[in-house]
Amino acid sequence: MARATKQHSCQSCGANYGKWQGQCDTCKEWGTLVEEAVSEALPKGLSLGKGRVVEFTTLNTQQADYERHHCGLSELDRVIGGGFVPGSSILIGGDPGIGKSTILLQAVGIMALKGYDCTYISGEESPQQISMRAQRLGLKDSPVRLAASNSVRNIVTSIEKGKPPHLLIIDSIQTMYADNIDSAPGSVSQVRACSQELIRMAKKVNCALILVGHVTKDGQIAGPRILEHMVDTVLYFEGDRGHQFRILRAVKNRFGATDEIGVFEMTEKGLQEVTNPSALFISNQDKEISGASIFAGMEGTRPLLVEIQGLVAPSQQPTPRRAVVGWDSSRLSMILAVLDARCGLSLAGNEVYLNVAGGLRVNEPAADLAVAAALVSSISDIPVPENSIIFGEIGLSGEIRAVGQTDARLKEAAKLGFTTAIVPLGSKIKEPTLKIIEVEHLSEIVSLFTQEKPPVQNAQMKG
Ligand code: TYD
Ligand code: MG
Image (tube, rainbow, N blue to C red; front, side, top):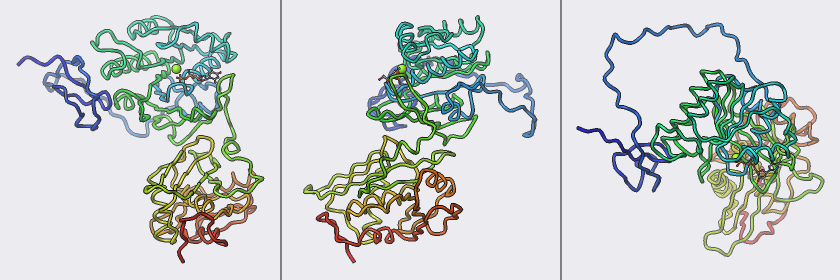
C-alpha cells in the first residue's frame, strides 16, 4: 500500500493523525491540527549483527567537571548552573516583550568584550534594529558577530565553515526554516527539524547554543513538547509587564539545579541584576496595615521575603469573586475551606482577593500560613504583628506543618531587620535574634486577630 505523505500534527503536543479532526485526542486541545508533510522514512526492520558493539563503562568514570563559560551576568550564570557548558543547548521561553532578546544581547555583548566569540542570529529583527538596541545597552562596541537569517541550512554552513563561536544565540526557533521540510516556519515539524539540526551542530562544533522560544497563550513554549526534551536546559523568563522585575527560572537543567531563580530589573539601560531581591518585594514596613503579611520564602537555594496582600470585602453577588495574582487559586480555595470548617470563619458572602506584591509568583505550600494571616488580618482589620515574617504549610485538618530550610528563611528575616517570626511548632530554630511564635493549628492564627469584632459584614466568626 502506498504510504501517506501528509499527516495532521497537533501544534500543541505534537501528536500525529492520518486525517483531520477538530480535537486532539492526546492533549484535548481544539483546532490545533495542521496538515504537514511526513518527513521521516519508515524504519526498515533492523537485522541483528549489522550494528557496532557499543562500549560500556562504569558509573565512576573519572571525568573532569564541565568546562564552563561565565557570561558575567551573575544571575544568569547561577540559574544555568554556573556558566554555559560548551556543546550544550538551552531553550529560553517567555511572553513577547518580556526581555528575552535584551538579556541575550546583554549576555553576548558582555561575553564578547571578555574575549569570547559570540554570534547572535536573529530571524525577527534586522541588524540595524539590534545594533540600535546594543547602543542603548552601552554595548555597541562589543565584537559580537551579528546576522539576520531564517535559514538553518545557511546558519549551519556558516558556523561549520567558519571559526565556531563559544556561544550562539538563535532568536527565535519559531522563525527558523529548514528547506528540506515542506511546512511553514513555526509548525511542529519545522521547529523539531530546525532544533535537531542546530543542537547536532552545537555538539559537533562544541559551542553553547541558546534557542529563544515563543510561548503560547497559556504560557507553555510553543511547538512540540519534545523540544523541551531535546535541549539540556529549559529556562522561562517571566514577570508582569506592569512591573519592572523579571525572573529567570530554570525548569529543566542537565547541568545544575532547577529551583534557582535570577532576578532582574528592566530599566532604560536594559536589564540590571538584582542581587538582594528580598528588599524589593516588600513594601515600606514602617506603617502597620491590615491585610498584608510577609512570607519568608525560598527560591532554590536563596531565601526571598515577599509581601502577601489579602482583601476580604462584602459582596452582593450570588457567587462572590475570588481573584488571585501570583499564587495558586485552588490552594486559596483550600485555605478558605479550612478556615471555614476547622476555625469557624466563613467567608461565603465575601469577595476574596489575594495578591503577591511585586509581580512575583509563589509556588511553595509554605506560603499557606502567610496567606491565611493576610486574609484573617483583612477581615478583622488588625495588622499582622509588627516586623514579623511568617511561613508554614496548612493541612486539611487545620494543622500547621513544618517546612524545609527554616534556618535560611529566619536568617534572611533577621538580616533585613525583622524581629518576630511566626513558624510551625517543632521547627528547629537556630536564629537567636528573633522572637519566635510557634503555632500548631490555624485557629491560633485566627485568635491572634480576633480581639475585636470583625468590621466586615457577612464574615461570621462563629464560636
Ligand atoms: P525584548 O527583549 O525585545 O523582548 P522579547 O525578545 O522577549 O520579545 O524586550 C523589549 C522590551 O523591553 C520593550 O518593551 C522595551 C523594553 N526595554 C527597556 O525597557 N529597556 C531597554 O534598555 C531595552 C533594550 C528594552
Ligand atoms: Mg525578541
